[in-house]
Image (cartoon, rainbow, N blue to C red; front, side, top):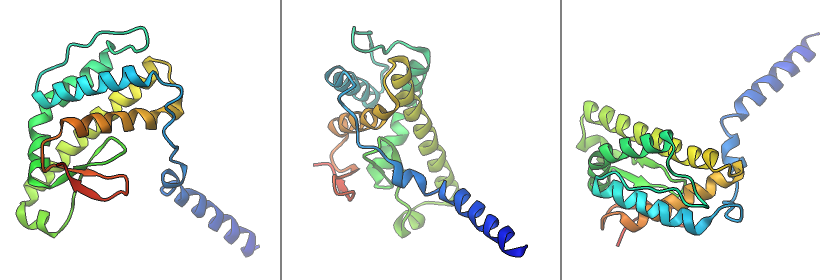
Length: 184
């Protein structure tokens, strides 16, 4: 009697615990073939350049790409308003741009010694807000344009590449090897 219950318990814990590891094993290669890649790259660069400049971009729908949807506009607007704070983190070397299109804090000894707990909490809120808005932008671009779910990683990668073009010299980003490197 105890063995079947113990076995079921182990299986249940294993399956529930695997959910935290599944994204590492289920990441898909970017699927560019089902996207209007050129139009998306052009729009991503325009969006990222405007965000870096601190001004909302003038976006127009094209036959290949719909950009004028309220969630997309809202995500871009809040990113524009947060751009100076994000750049401050990147300039200080406390954060880096990853290939998945998101911003990450570099949590090392130098960061902890250079900041107070209150500053770290503030930085975490900045990064969390940036994550939310970037995710909203990527996901809504996919949904509004009826791109397949597997194209999400390609959208993220396209925006990462656009962001690399507009980043300031010295800001950190993730290389193809997964290592941080300063922009030259």
